[in-house]
Image (cartoon, rainbow, N blue to C red; front, side, top):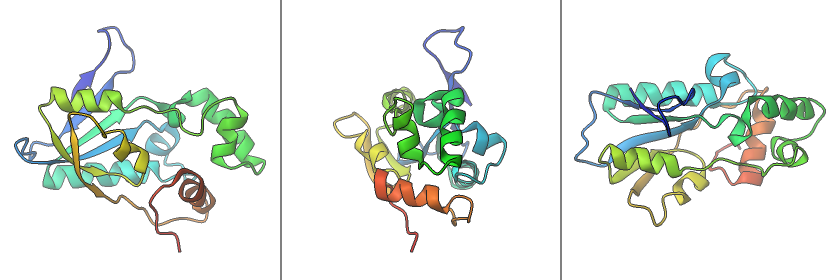
Length: 178
């Protein structure tokens, strides 16, 4: 585990979890996972985040690879605003419109730090575990090349099906929900 921060006093650094089985001379399996306290820690059924993190950790532990844990909770709006968005979702607003209603973009995340972390680790080619085409596009014109995209789909649940459909239809996530 390697912590990345802008200063030594940064209370919430980004984390790179590098499996001991990782061959850094070949394209590396990488999961860029944005912090989701509700899913990652409390196993919320509203999203698939915790399940994705668990699967990514399993895959990288067994076969080699890296999980980058970026501290950009709630698609970059923070935990307090995420709770406000949840309240709006409880009233029937979808996840995208909830963020917009609160004055944010649908997705405020950035991936420049992930690219910098990978460069620091000496990685120039990756197999990116994601369903989000924006993560793949973030590597366009960077020093790190995405060799392939590896889907990371979790079976939908009744509690998160509408959320996943919104991610697919409004955010372009590559999901098979039929």
